[in-house]
Image (tube, rainbow, N blue to C red; front, side, top):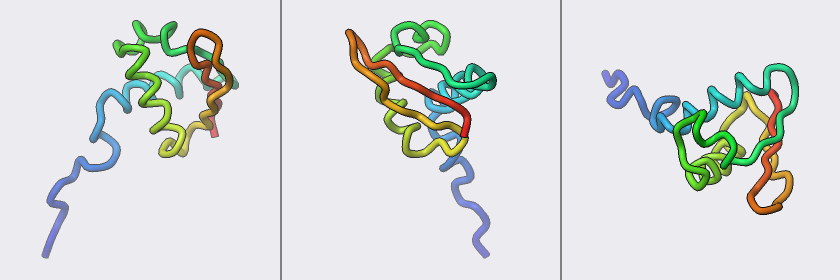
Length: 83
C-alpha cells in the first residue's frame, strides 16, 4: 500500500505563490482589480520581479482567479478577478 509519500506537492509547494494568491483572492472579492507588482510588493513581501514570475504561473494554475496581462507602461499591469 502506498499512501502519500509526499503530501505537500500541490498547494503548499511554493509558499510565495500561495501568499500572493491568497492576497489576490482577498483583493478581488469585490470584483476585478488592476495592479502593478511594484505597488503590492510590500504588501506581499515579494519583489516586483518575483510577483511578475509568479503571476505567469498563477495565470495557468489558479482556477479561483482569472489573470490577464493587461498592459505595459513602465511595468506590467495585471488584471485579476475571481473565477
